[in-house]
Amino acid sequence: QVQLVESGGGLVEAGGSLRLSCAASGSTFGTYWMGWFRQVPGKEREFVAAINLMGGSKYEDSAKGRFTISRDNAKNTVYLEINSLKPEDTAVYYCAARPITMTSYDYWGQGTQVTVSS
Image (cartoon, helix red, strand yellow):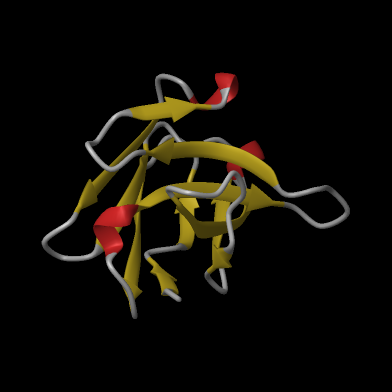
């Protein structure tokens, strides 16, 4: 079991930057793939980025170049830095954890709202 708590969302002007954080507790953080997803009202939750145990990362195509995922295993925290924010980045951003033995993300945070004004 792992509990996830996101923070760092807010209202930002287009072109600005944010760093989202996700603090994990309750289990061995280093044994999980960590991912970020986002969702806007009326649409399905979509994948943004993920990072493996050793720091290798992958991104959804539209996130490449402006989004950076990272993790600090000593702090049990995963980050998502978003640069050059666009109004279409407005969404609730969720952190998720996937045990290395599983193929799906089993644990989710409550989400943090990111709103980008034009």
